[in-house]
Image (tube, rainbow over all chains, first blue to last red; front, side, top):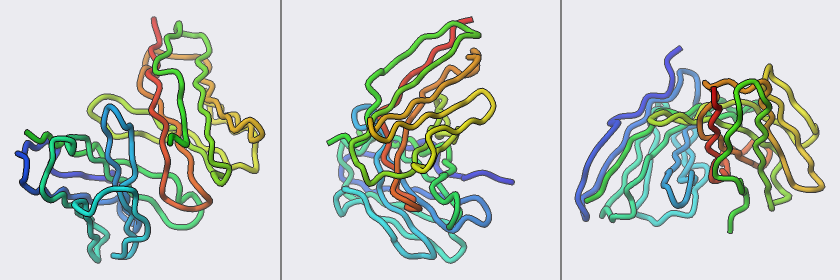
Length: 114
Length: 112
């Protein structure tokens, strides 16, 4: 069974640019969540999507957005990049119902903003 | 306001001995707790979880203990192996919500 796949694994952008990250969940998982990991703040919840609808959102500015497609694949977008957006962005998928809290994470997309 | 805290940034243990990683939480609404392990350049990997209706859960070498009155949980690894060297994250959530609140992590080093 394939795991959670995130692309690209590494990318470098400059301030003011925008970036789109992609996530393919485990087959059968309909919930996709995104987390940001930075050395200072640890892992912080960005948002969660289920059946193409955003179900929950963390405390991040509107520059951070996401969407989910009918095949459960998800993308997140960060516009007007700032230096502080440099981080590891982790996608996780899960089943719904019992055991739903157990998230399976991808390897992450490492974003560097110069 | 950190709702989940791991106060020890690092821990070193001799191979074969017990590793005990600690985690405290402040939000009494949390009722499901998880431990994840993370190696460099990889995403976190689920280890073990516990519901607030239990006070202990075991899975092989890993045992998680929950003390609800103290809002404290701990992960015991026995015996510790060099391959257990990684960053361990404690996480908490409310019921079946997928939003996890993570601690800052503890770097465990198991010395051969």
